[in-house]
Length: 367
Image (cartoon, rainbow, N blue to C red):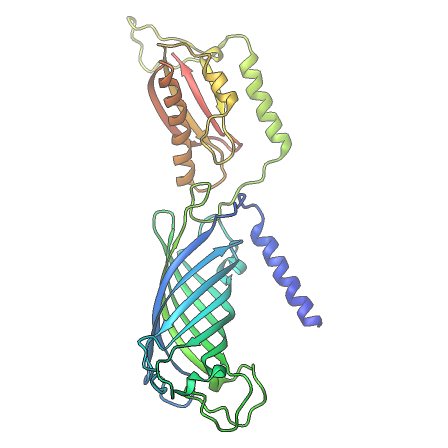
């Protein structure tokens, strides 16, 4: 009991550590789907490279944290070797519910995006069903056609793609079939003899198969536009309040010269001084590029026919590539709204992360 309590405490600690500092995960975030295939053979009683049984299957799963997840997998097995023929193209199917543990993230931590190479452990239980079109086939007995199974596996995975949304893995595993109550020296129809054993289920090496599969996984896009967990940098509330106060101060300050930069003196060209009154600030929610009612109200103060320049920015949470796209998206949504009101947008650019605070802004410079 003490060992069980310690194990559960370790798992709970790992779950809390892996979940900290992550962007909020919605109900349908972090799902994936994949296909796999390979060969299996009996663990004992023959040469491993003989009587290979090909299989193919699908896997659907969800990561709840960068460490822990669940997967539903179903595989079809096509060969009758070394067992008695059942007279069907597909001899059996095995459907399993598997718990997954990303060992690389557990022991190495999650840095904001998956590693190029990761190792994961899988364990779970399943249900094996054997098909048969022969009336005299031994597996037609009810106690042999359906069996509880268990799978233990390791995934050696390679993540790739522009956002590492794809994963290729190689998976060695051992699969056990729980044969139920023993029958003295009786052939089960699976190719094993139960012998003088105690009642099942039990992890009997003689009632198992080793399997080597390879698979390809696609991770669906999440609600924030990424395909993996996003790490956020916790912000002190005082820092956020100070930033908001600074923005409000700039908005309310009387027009004054902020900066003036002349690259080259050209006497015939008049350079307009940039003042606070020429700037309009539009704020966004974290990870979003949707205009709020307050943002539209601020933009409505810009008159039709004037020229503007729009600059989008992002805060430090998330990867650089994601923040660059987010900043451009914020600039574009502001520019499109202004164009719909007759404002002339000379330029709309995204500047990515600006500074070390929560700069989720689009800044409009009215020329």
